Image (cartoon, rainbow, N blue to C red; front, side, top):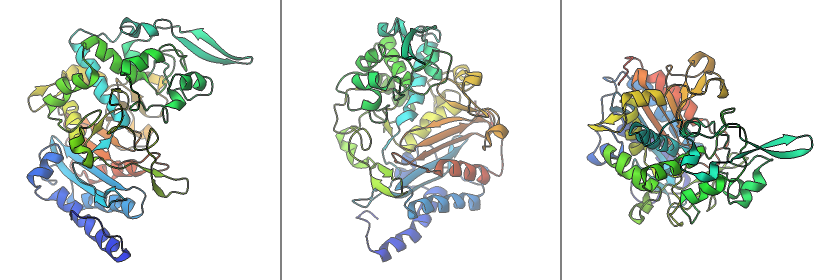
Length: 448
């Protein structure tokens, strides 16, 4: 089916019955060369990889139900084990208004999944001796030399000096005291600087007609939300880290990513700002309303973004990339495999191990989880009430994208959709449960 999707009720019903079969063909049969390339890794036999095919079919039905109930417009998902794809599928629509179907090579705004790439970039420089985890950020960004912290007292807000200098490690672990500037005590400062409330939901920088380091230098003069190393606070830390990578390497962040990560790993469909030639592959962003219905998200920072027609100048290391499910799968497989993929070594096994163990102890207060150098780490599945082995790591993005890697069972999993906001969407958690439920032969393979 390549033409517009019919809009009659009878046609929609017919398509809903057909799509699960199409998804199963993608996931369990021999793929065409195009589809095989789009899914990122070689196709494997699900049974040989330890999965029960009938249990994988449950995933097909659940994802399709989310599409049919209009809880999500469309999904691309991939499950790989020990370097081979066990299952993959594309469901629903990439654009509801035109009826464009979702395809394996669809481009997604991956928002905070960018953080993992920027973290890897920083650790490349650490391995080369051009950065140290203990380096002060002010070594590369003088505006962070005298940061202040906003403290609320009975008499109002006061600004106090930071008791610790922000380090590269603080940026990687989100313990730098940097939020997204939306808190009551600092929001006015951030808004006046074009950040926080002036930047969509706080994290959005693609509309800025300036380099990211110009934006981050301005951030260095704004008050922090907490003292460095005293709290885990999610915010602009990885955007600052991207600027540190630029200044330590002497390259713009997009060029560093391309030369040191994307090209070696064969990630040919990942950019900050995609070229015009692939604009037709961009998925449309939809919002879940308070009533639970899907509507097309607005243009601009709180919806479609400026990834195609904007200034194309601000390479935001915290939330700026556009990618495919297959490309991101290759990036994650490199990490699962101890820093290398198909002969291209990006990091050493020791560095990947350091990145994927807890670094912050009790500062990260999600029961059963810790936080490493760029990733959430599952430490105690029982306390977390979640599937997976200790050491499972992952994260997600603001547009409802999600990923995880479980080195013990050799799993790499990617789930892509485009919802902003995604109010109450619980597909990622249900999907993870069903992936583990389909894994009937655990191998306990380290894969490193």
